[in-house]
Length: 434
Image (tube, rainbow, N blue to C red):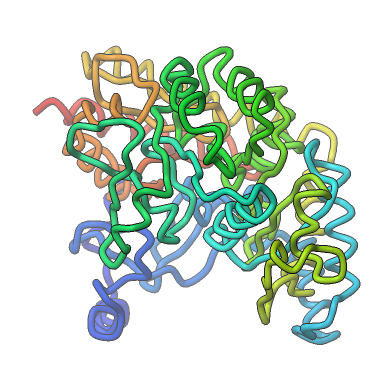
């Protein structure tokens, strides 16, 4: 397999220098690669992207998940072009936002109403605020290692490294007031007993529990989500599923359909917006009523608005994307493609005596280089991070792009994409133990 790291045009080198001058760290803050492998994306089609130098990559990053129907899908492009021709944004409620909201309610089990935002960070932040207003309580429980965006509250115990004393949180970003640490309770994912003990002790103070039903790539252990649903229902504490990653990826109805557990609210984005800036809070109408100034008590009403919330262009992309995903066999194809490369990577690691744990579901997964089972954040810390970095770099050198800790299969990845990726595994994995 040809390595691409040396094929860098003068134009791309100059643009990379410009990026390092005008952008903090030379990037958008999303992914980081070695300087010698750094590149700038020019375009994407289907399952491939091309950099400014013309190098082609098999893309398993897929925009960090949203491009499940592929880059520049003709139906999505057509819908977006038509929407742009009719006007980019209005601030007033628009037709496509209403149509998409109706489709979301049909698709997602917990959804009775929809409130739009432009990002997952905003959606998760506003979902927590809605529960605080609805319950008139301040504390929210999240799980260690869970990522719910970059708000002050969400950045508690995302990447803690010290000994954890549950339920005390740890701010993992500069600029977060220390006072907020007291408002977030932290529990270990997949540990129902500890979680229940924390909720038992603090339920009178709690506004909500927020969880990624598939946390990063750690799948819920049997009974964990069901138990969490039972405990929160016992105390009438709203349960929020952060389905930014799992929504319309695990299944058309997201993790709620896939795992058979229905929360009170969820947040969705990524796939739902078809690759455009769009996210939403979905859930019970009585909770979402706090956004309605006409019906909410003045003390409960939440003044939430945004210039581009429910953008007609983004909603058009979302409607077109969901129509593609409703095609018979769409999810069978995504799951089958992911299973092929997931199984192959596990097999190749075993054959080369590389300790590895394959974590996640077929449609979103990754490998952790450790001999011990990994079911939560602390287990992930025991994995060999340097080996992971070498693995990711080795794939990138061979034109295979993935996330720092995720593969995102899509419905447009081809047999050739799978073969090229497995070939790269066969070249890179044997080098990891050196």
